[in-house]
Length: 257
Image 1 (cartoon, rainbow, N blue to C red):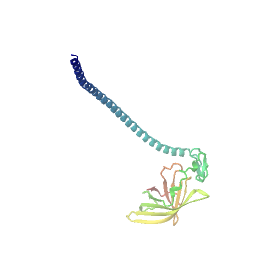
Image 2 (cartoon, helix red, strand yellow):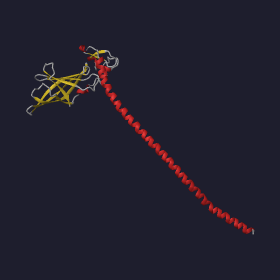
Image 3 (cartoon, rainbow, N blue to C red):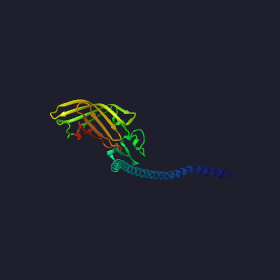
Image 4 (spheres, helix red, strand yellow):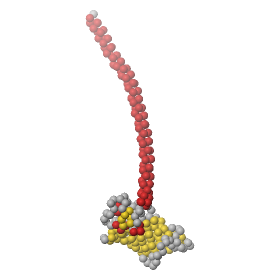
C-alpha cells in the first residue's frame, strides 16, 4: 500500500512538473506581448522627438540664412557709408595736396602716403591696402572702350583701347610713386563699318596717396588718360577720363572691361 501511494505521488509530481513549463511559457508570451507594445510606444516617442528636433533645426538654419544675408547687406552699406563719411569729414586743404588720415583725422601731405614712414597716428598712410602698387604691374593687360558720347574721335562709332604695362619702376628715394611704361593699341570702328588699328607707346605715373593714375602717349599730339582711384575705399569703381593735348576738358570717359 505504501509502495502504491508513493508511485501515485510520484506520478502526480511528474505531471505537475510537465505542466509547469507550459504555464511558464504562457506567462512569458503574455509578458512578450506587453513588452513589444511598450517598445513600440517608446520608438514612436523617439521618432516624434526627432521630427520636432528636425523642424527646429530647419527653422534655426533658415533664420541664420536670413541673418547672413543681412550681415552681407550691412557690410556693403558699411563700405558705402565709410566713403561718404570720409568725403564729408575730409576737411584737409586739397589745394595744398593734403589728405586726412582715415581714423586719427590729422592732415598730411599726399607725398607722405606710402613713403615707407608712418605719419598718421593710426598708421593708415602705410597700410597694405592703401599702398597697393599692383594695380599697374608689369605684364598686365587692360581693355577699355570709349563712351559713345565721346568727342575725341568724331567719326568713330566705337573705340576700343588695350593698355599693356611693360615696365614698373619705383625709385628708392621716391617710393610713393610708381613709374610705368607700355604700349597702347587703338581699335577704331568707323561710321562706314571699316576698322583701323593703331599702336602707340605710353608713359605713366601712379600715386596711391593722390589716388591718381596718369598716362600719356609719347608721339605726336599726346593723348592723356587720368584714372581716379579711391584713396581708402578700393571697392569704388575707377573713374577714367581721356584728354586731347593740353585741353583741360575731357572728351570722353573709359569703361573698363
